[in-house]
Image (cartoon, rainbow, N blue to C red; front, side, top):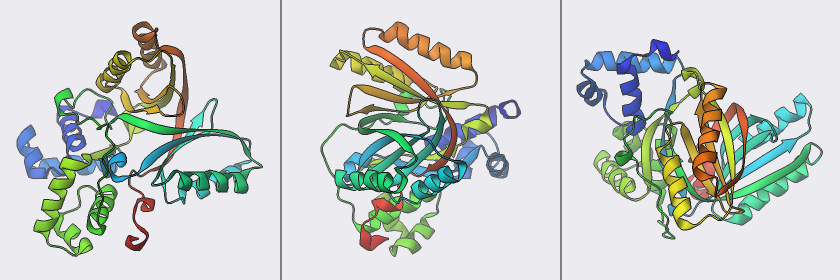
Length: 327
């Protein structure tokens, strides 16, 4: 599939992953094509399944949302497994659900305003599926390192907007919640449509989006299907030790600069770093693991990886983030 993409296609993907709200006119000027040619290429990328939609990355912590990673190991029939998947997909606070091969069968990510809400999800899972759940492991996310879409070094480091480490909470009113909810469903939604959905003028929508970008929006981006580009995705888990501030900073910089790491975060339950690594071959994965050992042998005491077989859900601003009277 990647052999069919020329430099113009890759440049379009880069620009859409940097800012999916760029107009086709603007993209055309930046890469030296006509607007119609850009539109045709984008539609072709969508038809091929490479572009799988558009969404908005925000910093959940700043709006009072805590994220939790949950690993699940099951022993179930096909029918029981499908029932579990349906139950999980219907949970309003579920953001990500992936099927794994390896030590764990599923990895999922939830966003909750209160830890009690996450405990309720766990209790419900245990009550409904205790007969098939062998064990589980939960990891409150201390802070994310990066969230990217393309496994190539296209977005310049100076353009990467890092996640803040702060206790500041920004209270969103109903309109801003609705704006973020709609942008997450489709970050290319026209301003006039956002105005209709929120009941305010397009000018006010523009003003609010600008403010949200300064405060909590990391990026409006395209959702890229890595399998269609010839990549497999692996969940790489790094157990660390003696993690000083300087060495943790060095590891974080390495992760942020590594072009194949799509997502990474630090766990709050133990000194564990989880990364999602994109590779076309097993040799590329092995090279990554070897490089980690060589550069960070003093702080990485164990590393293991799991193959991401299938993704059932990817929604970083689900319905559960909305206030009850705004749903």
